[in-house]
View: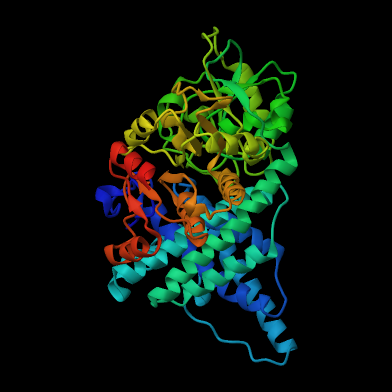
Length: 549
């Protein structure tokens, strides 16, 4: 195997024997092969769409299949075998659609090779062998590290984009333009592009389309559940039967809350589900009782200690321990071998039955809380007061400190950074990186908490809208605001958010705790020269530099 798509990649180079995430070589090969197969599907779907022909099943499958290859999502070889067979079947359907449309228009259809001509092996070992033949090292040998790294930058951007688009599609928000771009980009990658400028341009286009995707996701979440409102969330358990929900999927949480109504079971959020407590359409369920634990990387300890079943709705699953493996359930694209998979049925009857049979928490714990719910609507409804606070000198600077958390050493930087931010500065945060400091008592500036939790990584659109609105209010560009972006990254959702920020022309972003292994020094220099992208240094130096700019 050869995988370097996440921040924790072994030695800062690549995982070659076993993924730091727990992915084994068999699964890695199947994921590589699935991306290759999807490129072939994209070749025909892209050409069919030029004749005005598209297929909803192909569109949605493309999202889910790409999402399944994102870090810490699916580790189940049998599920990947199913995806691969479906990809071949839908590729043949897209081919027929294209050829029929071309002939009807009086054109001669192209004869396509490469991924478009791939035929799946007859069994799982055969598919694994096929995957070994298309792994990254083959392209590195043929095209070099720089070109391959840029190809992977585009691929990882597509993985993040597909994940966000899947979240939106589940709630009924989708766009033919987004599907068209996915297939266009897959077709682009199938051609083994080697032109650096074209690859950089495609990466920025991915960021541009992702802005549309995040707008769709924002509309999906707020349309279904209302705009988040500032909400105090207990982080300590109370006595009673309990179910824990992790991941990102609000629809799964909503259905679980409906099905547990009146059962006496308390529902707790975990990880990126914490912001769910701020949505009016979810918080009215009184048995949505609080948040348990922290970010995804601590789940093995936290899930083992949780006295009830656990539902993993999207990315961030780790290899389960035997102590809770029989209490763990997966939904949607998430998978682990021998873990009960609920699919997309949202029938939680088995989870509820297990919760009723399990002891649950036996006593209350003295209450501790965090405050969430400072999405764009909540912040911008107070924009006038914030602007006046800036003009009066009460707020000197804004720091957006957000992104993914992880287990790799160096992430204490973000805790130290938040603690050292001067008292006349506000911290905006989102995604699970906030767990590094969201329980710190950093006080207030006037009526505002100094830490404003915008929400999930899915809510990056809110952060962008807040920045744009402030820039308009001060009649300056976003880069001229007293605003600094200090980001942490782990997986491909963070990659595509970074591409979106770069597409918007936002400069001087600090990224950490380490830079991506797939971005080689020459490519990094282009990003430094064009966008001022830089690695974090020390909290003291980065704060001083931000306040001096």
